[in-house]
Amino acid sequence: MQVFGLVSAVAMALFGASAAQAQDVPCGGSFSAFKEGLVQEAVSLGHSEQTARQFLSSATQAQSVLKADQRQGIFQDPFITFSRKLISQSRLDKGRQMSDRYDAVFDRIEQDYGISRGVLLAFWAFETDYGAFQGDFNTLNALVTLAHDCRRPEIFRPQIFAAMTLYEHGDFDPRTTTGAWAGEIGMVQMLPKDILENGVDGDGDGHVMLKTSAPDALMSGAKMLSHLGWRYGEPWLQEIRLPENFDWSMTGLQTEKSVAEWEQLGVRARDGQLDDGRLLASIILPQGRGGPKFLAYPNFRVYFEWNQSFTYVLTAAYFGTRLTGAPVYDAGNPEPGLEGAQMKELQRKLAAHGHDVGEIDGILGAGTRAAVRSMQAELGLPVDGWPTQALLNRL
Image 1 (spheres, rainbow, N blue to C red):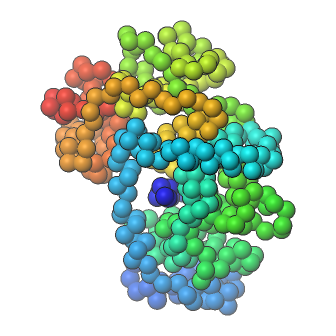
Image 2 (image 1 turned 90 degrees about the vertical axis):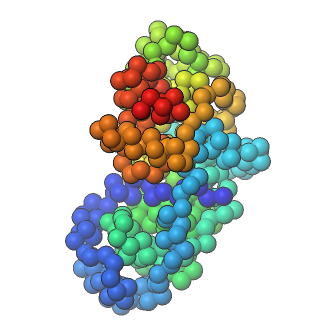
């Protein structure tokens, strides 16, 4: 089950001049004229016209890609529901088997990049079920279709030319290379530009083949996380306990304190001890003060450079801790949240009160969480960022 479904933020961060140039090139219109424009831009970027035409000759529009782009319902689930869907005993068992099978690779990753094997195993599991389901969308068609579509052309157009470079290296076939609907390739689902910049020949065969080589995929994923700012040898997430009289307004990623300061305020590890007291960390409550509670260390923020969904990020980070020995989280007894039409109604009411919640989409994203916290404070409710029927009634 592929759940990535969002283009990694690193794709946007790494486009540089190519992205700026792409913004000046029109999207939409005649598809054949659009492809001709791609050829001319490829030539301006240093590719030969013959190579560009050969590479793009088979590219067609894929309606299935556009439909997949609009279908993101799974990210509407709250953390407990979402994590229970994704984390199964079979995935845990398979993760431990893969950890043993590629023990030397994970040892090398931990030595070279300071990234725990649990982190990579969790991505590998969620993206492609450890390589079993890597996506059957033609990658070139996906990239060209999304670049032609006018929603986010600046994201996808540069990826076409990155894929063209991979083609010139003999590592991409425009007719047969497949992956996720948004153009990600391989066992840990990386975009072509990410592969060019962070690809590692982990098995020493002279090629970076993320679809068929687990060492290549894992080492490349580790290098990309390191490039995104992963701090060597540091933790990323830990489940905690909080005192009943805790000041909930101090929770959320917007507040950072040292671990030692949190300890003074009564924060305790649910299992074992908190990490280095000098590290900064934030407290996150994915389903409010009645639900699970976690301490998020600086490395947790790197996950958002891989994927922008809070629910996905927290689930992947938590699964990484499970794969390295953490117990099942305490689900607690959170108040029922809002779903579908109720969430949209809340977003409309928050917007009417002057809060920027972004698109009215029924998804509890960062903007909506921030608006909920602000409204809770204004109304004298516990400021835990969890939207409930009580809040909706008050509005």
